[in-house]
Image (cartoon, rainbow, N blue to C red):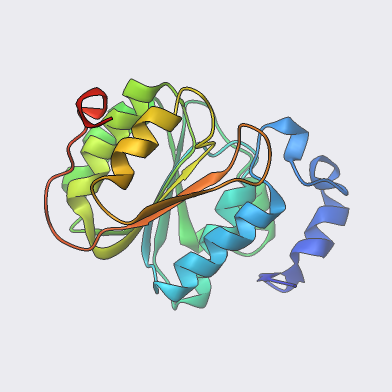
Length: 204
């Protein structure tokens, strides 16, 4: 399967960027290639125009999400990391008009960003995986996620994440898909405009 990034496929970008050469995980700290394809497919199916990503890193997931925005007719990916991610990959792929890179702690950045957005179509959480940190990211993004919007979380089988993800399953359609030990991706859809209970310990 080939997804074009600008006028190049992911296979061509892989061969041009030494950090992406012939690997499924970029230097051990980025999403798996199959996860990138899942993110692209979900964002396309949902016609996502406004996407929040925490954890920019090497921009592998950002490539797929920004490309989906472009293929959907335009919009904006807000990708957040405590350090500058490798956003040159997005620029090289002709996606410079489809993203904004925001630097800082994701909870603080989201606190400033959320009041400026009317609604969100798609959320991908892959930054600090401490359970309380992810809960804070959810607390900030869930109210702005539109009904029908998609929530995705990486590394759901990490022991720090699993209790929170189990509590999410009790509240809305949310599935966890394993692909590698302690990794996996969680995928859910907001089906009604109700608050999310993030008292995960009580819900277990």
